[in-house]
Image (tube, rainbow, N blue to C red; front, side, top):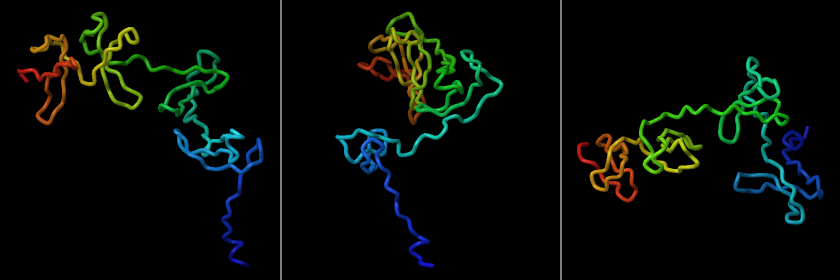
Length: 181
């Protein structure tokens, strides 16, 4: 038996369904994909690695309030979430309850809201006004009730450092280290 026949690894050329030109691996802002070699005459695109079923686990004991189908744990663009297993017919998604930790510190910008701990889509914590989007005040360090000794801004921040926690002014123009720490 010829060894060439046993180890033949020729790549099958996939053809564009629109114009029958060969597809090529191309690179875009969201990663690699298959695109028609006749571009720009043909704009056919195909995912290089088609997304397999995004359903991680079906929750049989919990039903969708909209269509009464079981809910499912899914893996999406921004991580895990719970949504209806009847997608795309039903678009129900369980939104996380506002489990944001209230800091007990009022917002120095609008004087009506309170600063609460939130998490960015990248997993970093920050503190923002609970009146968002009406008030867009936010800080990256834990807020502490108090007043800056230098500029009298009504908010201080706990900033971790090698020597321990330091209190700094929350006003970006000031950022003075407070005494007593």
